[in-house]
Length: 424
Image (tube, rainbow, N blue to C red; front, side):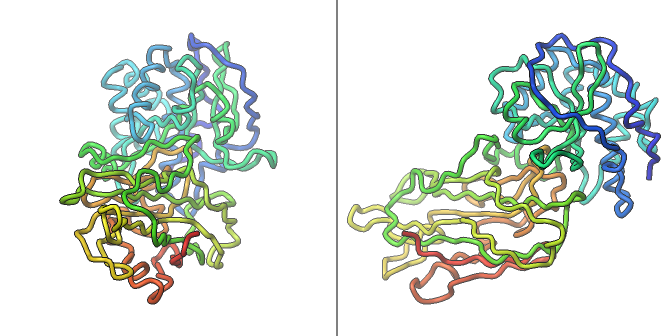
């Protein structure tokens, strides 16, 4: 465990040359609390080490004065990324002078035994090994890339006015090079034209999926739920799957509330005689489900949330006639080959962090992810094993209106019930 003096929060070196980027007027509230109390985690030394590592990298980046050209490059790369982020190793490959400056900072401000960037990365291990990123959570709501960046170590804080919730600590670098400690939440990040450069992490599983071409839908604060668009056939018997009874058995947050969120996606796959893949609809991180106070852990909640639709085709038009989730006959219709996939997952949402995998469709390479600190912060299914066969859709949808009306999901993180709902 490192001492608080290693990173010297609150005693950062002021930027000697102010970034020559246009500052836009934004009313970020000041943060006057003790940041050390948020970095510390007496119950989890590994988490505290990562907190202080993220703080050190954030402090280093805001101290060394990112140039307008470098800032634009970070924004452009984040905009091209399905997880709105750039690896710090990739940034340092393009701008090696930044690596030199970060190494200089860490030599004077080591985190435990990490006195350089390479050693700091080696030590970023929690449930799995991670690589540091700069995550730009508001990249898709920026009007341009000229705004002066706001730097953050991604540390969540809660000593704020009632109207500022789910906020993180950040630095606003002033024109004289000094840094003002501020609070930023989703609303402020959406309203500003200044990019939020938040130090975060990404895991090898998600990186491998991105490299392999898995299609993650890029998250945007402006995302909205999209269901039923472009489906083949007609919803002659539109059955849906919804959660209701929900019990969190584990907390992933150190602050007062757990932010429960959902990600789901549903799409067709190529079928002989039908044609190519057609997206049915998707909802990707950004559909906020529920904030659950820490006092409610291990207490059952009622949380109605859509997760899938049981579309099937129309015999009159000669299109697909089947339960398209798994090719199961309903209402006596003939069974065809499986033609559709649907996956979902619930997770602990941390909007400031780089998104991580939540599941992959087996046939068409479309995936779901969620913005969270660690890969293991999921509530329904282990992401590494979450495919269209993980949840028992046939048990829920087959033989309607008879048969099973609900399916229970239980693991070490949560218990929940998914219900069959007859939609209007």
